Length: 157
Image (cartoon, rainbow, N blue to C red; front, top):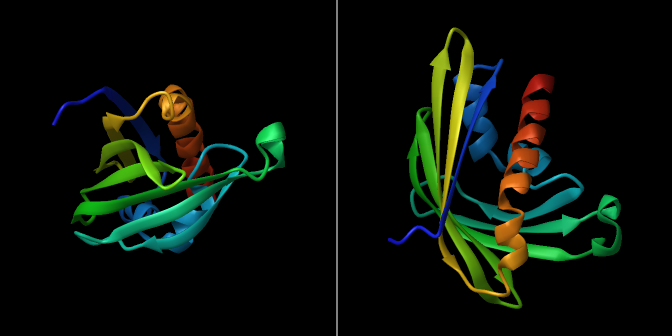
């Protein structure tokens, strides 16, 4: 598997590991934090088990100005679920029914003094250019915004 781009993000949350892990596997939680700022989700399937399907649509809100209403489908599949230590999944950005960007994401969760250290490793393994250029270029910022939303979600729990 050739890796075109790799992004590694580490965050520490003042929350128990089980809760942080649940935030990733329960679609009722995922819908509240997944996607960058100004974007909401429509989750068609989020089955967190090996072979379980991921099918959602990210929808641009009014905060994104001229992009408002744009829909960005994402499909994928969970590869591993090792509760509460780790999970991995593939994700595909889809444009006009065509997969334009695929990544393998592995998330690990370590408990440290009642807090959780989470590491997200995203490996882009397919990018169809020029269609994937926007997704590819905005990946770091989008994932950081998404994890900020996860932190805010966990702080309310």
